[in-house]
Length: 201
Image (cartoon, rainbow, N blue to C red; front, side):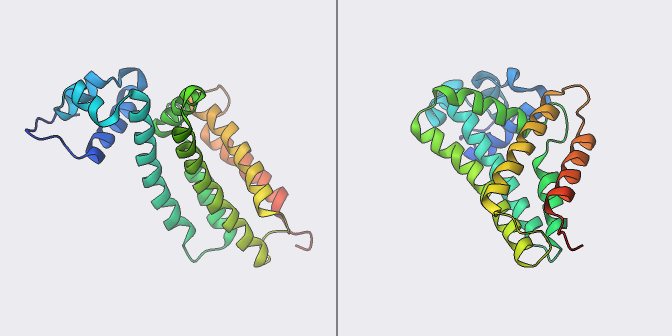
């Protein structure tokens, strides 16, 4: 990563992108205000002026990363493809790429810090989760209405499926032995085959 020196402060989105790059390269332990400041050519005090705290920096970085994932998720789900094919794409996007996946590393840290977060931060975290949930509910409802899936309550099924995905994803992100990404995707697809298959097929 090349240190950028500027006379003026870089746009906040650039700062968030650099923060995410640092997490990907070195993990959260190396992401300090001072280290980030060196990368973007700003003082740690200047960064604190923008973000107020490291908690806020991490949450904004997560929101920025989620915005990019949300755009990709929207493209995947808008394709003219069977609902099950798009559901598999949703799952594939949801599950971490592997141990220390930067997005999931950041997600876990933000949620760990949320125990002491204020109401605004909690609402913003809930908004992140809500976007994934709404998209999944809509996809399940579409699959049911088209007869691709057996009749299920889309909201209840989405809640249960996301709980399953979260549990498996945490195992992948922390590198729990015996839970590599390929195995997890196989487990989830087997579950979906059993849970959504129509009885008349």
